[in-house]
Amino acid sequence: LTIDVELTNGDKWSTKIKLSTIIKFERKYKISAAKAISPDGVYIEYMAWLAWEQNRSDGRTVPVFDKFVDEIDDLEVVNDAVPLDETA
Image 1: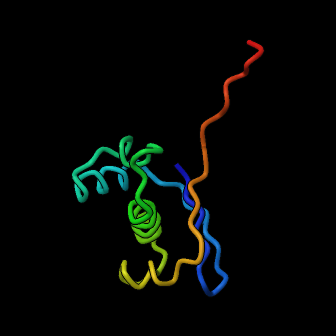
Image 2: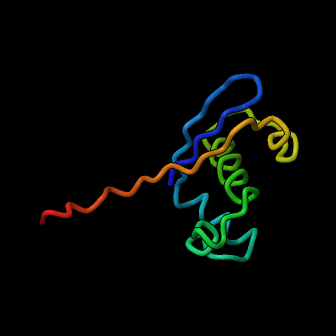
C-alpha cells in the first residue's frame, strides 16, 4: 500500500505503508486494514492517519495529526498490485 500526499506548501511525499504501521492502525481503529481500505470502507481519515504515522515512524518531522490533516492538499492511494497477465 502506497499513499501519495501533497501538502499545501507544495511538498509531495510517496509513502509506502509498512506492516508495523498497519498493525498500529488496526489496534487504534479496531478494524482490519483490508476492510478499511476496501472500496466500501475507505475513510479519508484512515488514509491520512496511515500516511501520517508512517512518515512519523520513518523519522520525518510531522505536526500533530489534526494539524497534518489541515496541511493536506491532496491524498491518493496508489495501487501497488501487479496486474495479472491476462494472456497466461
